[in-house]
Image (cartoon, rainbow over all chains, first blue to last red; front, side):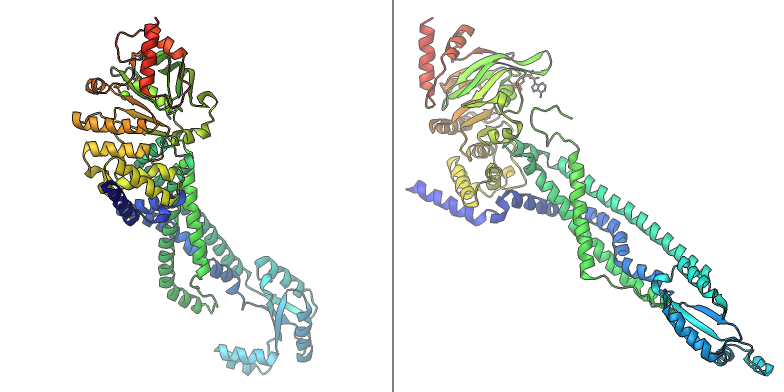
Length: 328
Length: 258
Ligand SMILES: Nc1ncnc2c1ncn2[C@@H]1O[C@H](COP(=O)(O)OP(=O)(O)OP(=O)(O)O)[C@@H](O)[C@H]1O
Ligand SMILES: [Mg+2]
């Protein structure tokens, strides 16, 4: 009787103080082990997370601003135009109708006709020698059509083609455009993009290595647990799962760190960047990342964590091999 | 029933840790494994637990033939075995309860089962009140009992104990032995490796004696010869419930028949 009572007490004790139910399944156990690892080794985990997060911060910033930057290439020159100078013989009426005709051509978004008088007025306004011009008595300026190309024609090659085809027209005297500026901008942008991606690639790789190394160390630290579990009949999947979960956890938390760093950095440089682009009359604006962009970074970081741990566990270890195999 | 037929084990080629060992231990029997240090006791237990593979010979437990056992089934085999070590190999980062629960988690038991079984096993080794202590807070004897609880919690058919009383005093050793005998009485095949002469004298069970990797004796008596061993082995018990008294009787009778 007394025996039964103690037995019952033990049972209630067990139900009161045993860990939560989910930690007693294969997956739950693995997850609980990963959390325990983070908790027990707060400082080391913190350092790992910071290294991982900082490595991933630049790739995250590039990812976040990729949209804005991609637009920058075209956006900045969206307001750019070719100036088509008509020959002096073309009168206002013909000029205006030519502007209309050009609209029908491919690659042209809109056109606007600047009559000789308007050209003179603009010149006077912008230039000190306007009055001198007026003194000449007759207007030396030709009529012009401002041609705004389609956005997809804004590459250097497209513009060149458009300019050449416009120049063929008999009533057109000359087509003016600063191709060097476009080329230079595009070269700078594509170089920046390349450097950005290469850097991002290296940093992502280093994040992967950080996780791999951490998991390898963790494997050594856990050798008693691994060996005992193997003795008790654990399969490889049971041994490896906590380590993969740890990798995933590091990845996810490191991804959070990267997102936070990226958000802070972007909000810091947003104002000066927008001011700068304002100086160039550019419509470019550094946009704050959306929730789905943050989610993408977290997903990628988690995958990196899993990948890093799988890669580091692929190297054979005495603590994971079946018993009786030759030690490595 | 544990059967060894002409089993040899060489860790390094040419150096026999076990040499041509043959015996069979009936299911439910309690047997000591003795011999000097380095005689091969641990090696023999490792072979049974499939922690090592023999370089020659044939091992089987009940109907499980080790030669045809697939590597992916080895963990399952180990799940049906209880193993107790001298250095009890407890995990110090978790409670006694969680240490004992580990084989059940590995075995995929349900939560309610786990709670009941762990509580019952701890009750049985007299540690119910220490369930949520950390193992390092326990005495050596208590730790060893936790190790035993962990070994038996999944109700194995075979219990292997390597020096379970290793560095414990005589009284605690006797308590541990009582525990192991209880499991044997409930039908578990128990094989205990020990060189503790006191234990061997106090508890009168059959002994397998190893010397330099060879099985030299299968009985309490040191006069037994290799010939006796063969006679005994040729007529293994086919009855799973055979108890150690019966083995003894048989051994005695076969010796008389010599
Ligand atoms: N992993 C190993 N690699 C190489 N040799 C080993 C290994 N394990 C044991 N041996 C050798 O096998 C022989 C038997 O060792 P074993 O551990 O089985 O002895 P034992 O009877 O358990 O001794 P003890 O009472 O000291 O524990 C010894 O000579 C030992 O050196
Ligand atoms: Mg030994």
